[in-house]
Each structure stands twice: as C-alpha cells, then as structure tokens.
Length: 197
View 1 (cartoon, rainbow, N blue to C red):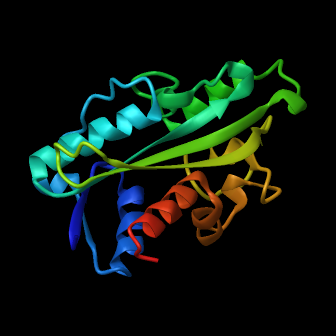
View 2: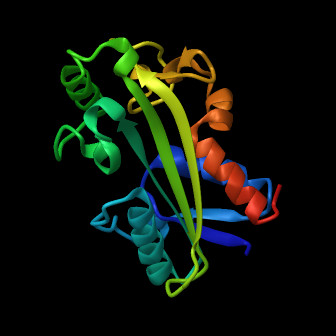
C-alpha cells in the first residue's frame, strides 16, 4: 500500500495523517481529490459511522480508505454528546455553541461527577467490499471543567481536563496531545498493526 484516501473533509485531520504516513512512504489523499462528498452518518456507534465513511471513500476512489469517527462521552449525560459531538448544538453547530450547550447541561452537576472520555475509532478498508476492515480504538479519560482553559486544540479541548496529563487538552502542545490523545492512541495501534512503526 503506497497511497490511501482519507474519508474526511477535515483539514486538520488530513495534515496530521499526511505527516504520520509520509514518514512511512504512504501518500494520504483527501477525499476531495476524488470529488467525494461526506456520507450521511446513519450509524449508532463510532464504529458503524467510521465503516460507512471508509467504505464510501474506498468505493468511489478505488483506493484503500482510512476513516476516523470520534467524539466525547460524558457519564452524567448518559454518554452524550457521543456520536453527535460535532453537531451537538444543532445542524449549524460551532465549537463554541457545542461547548456552551455542554456547560449548560452540566451546570448543576458537581465536579466529581463530570467524568468523561474522548473516543476515536479508526477504520482502514483495503477496498469497498473488504469483509474484515481493520478497526482501532483509542480513549482518553478526563473530566469536564466548569469553564474553558487554554488556547490549543479544537472542539471540546478547552473543557476537557485530561487525567493523565493533569492539564486541560487545550493547554497541551500539539506534539504532546497527538501522542496521548484518543486519536494518538488509535493511530499508534494502526501503525503497529500495519508494521510501519
């Protein structure tokens, strides 16, 4: 495998994956290169949605496809926002509106009960009919703060206090976050499985 398509329109993810795979002589092409639109995420789990995205991109591009589905799970909210993390506050959601909604929903929840974790599921499909897609899962434990901290990262990072780092995700330098985060963990498993490390 010398090239694959990333089933995402997210430029940040594309840049991250291009850097990781460039060191291993694998070109990562954006789905836009093949005029692939985002597929509707109709799955009920991160795994289902990642498979839908990877299969769609592999079918149209004819290349192996890598898809990522990730989000935040908050225990006090019975797992919400979960698979709806990116659009938690509605179809026109922004990072700020999602964070505002999360804080409002947790306003009466004490600090000790604000446990949460980020999940990332990576799926690599060798072709659209791949009966055994490779699936890698990473999770990052923490809790939700009552106010934003830090200026790094995106999404819920300013509200997520990472237990292992004793710091907010948005306070971590990118090179640290990329190693310890849910996505970093899933990528590490992918690289090991492909014997690229």
